[in-house]
Amino acid sequence: MPATEVCPNGTTIKLIDGYWLPADETRLDEILKDSIALGRPAYQHRKFEAALRYCAGRGLAIDVGSHIGMWSLQMIAAGFKKVYAFDPDPSKHDCFHRNLERWSPRPGDVTHHQFGLSSQRTRVNLKVKAGTTLKTHVAAVADGEFEVMPLDSVPLPVGMTCDFLKIDVEGFEQFVVRGAEILIKRDKPVIIVEQKDGVASKRYGLGDHDALDILTDWGYEIAEDHNGDFIMLMDHHVAFD
Image (cartoon, rainbow, N blue to C red; front, side, top):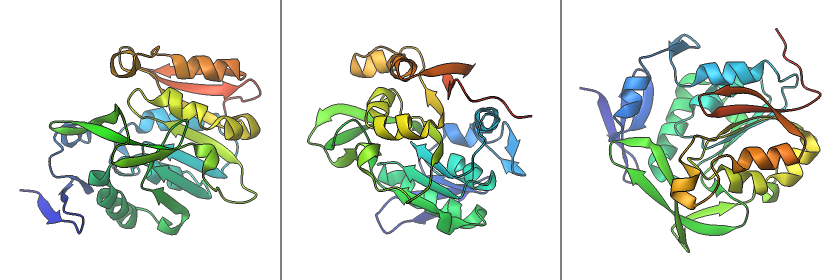
């Protein structure tokens, strides 16, 4: 049986394959056994490694939809000076911090924001799928329990360029992109954004690739498609071996 603990906020978490997960998570338990990165079980690391090939700078990396911290841990391990992570779901917050303390040599260089990102400042509710936190998403309800705001309204490290931006928010990506317009146009980071078919249209009545279309209008191009996770680049980016 896995080790479990009850956190101060009342959530129960468990230790699986070296990572703290929400106690009711079952899908990620299985996925973690599929691959290895940084010498331990991993999740989605191949997408990160593919995107990292285009990233010359190692200033600020931003992890939108940070979940239990898998991407943030990889960003720090890849040498980014600072990581800013965003996730409004309280069931994952203690897991994120426990995993950071357990695995990161530089936990102080990760700033974890316990709110979500959108195109405007408001409050939303979250919809949780039984058995997995991987599908938790913003419900189409205003005046909810959880705060969201534009990335452009969040104070970022002074004098540091955002070199890498990851957005995985289960169909809500268009709103995150619109709320980060100033940063994206100014810093031109390498972006990896999830845009899976049938997600945004089903949940929000949007086009499934609206975030890609917005970024394309701003001068980005699709470099690679990893099963619905798109690596987006300004035309001056080239792959580094």
